[in-house]
Length: 137
Image (cartoon, rainbow, N blue to C red; front, side):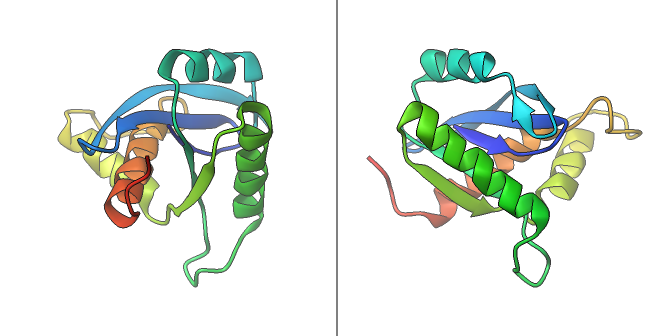
């Protein structure tokens, strides 16, 4: 299960590593980066992920930003609550790529503020993780 961390919305995607398949789920609303943990628990109970992948928003030079520190904190909370491994994956460029993918899928361009591409971004994070990590199991 992958997360595209944000302060207002957190994108979520699930996938199957063996097949390399991913699917976006509805984003979680967040207040200053904190989701309704009951909803996260419902997702974990439903999908039973083996591990969590959290997108790490690094600066273009690869250094950490305030948002990457907050994403790490979110990942640490996932681990603390659900006792599953957490991996962090460089997410540079995923939002731009997610918007491109949304347009290719027929979405009209415009404001993504209220109708975001968080789930697609989480899918891209998970796909990238599958492509660059050794198999887990």
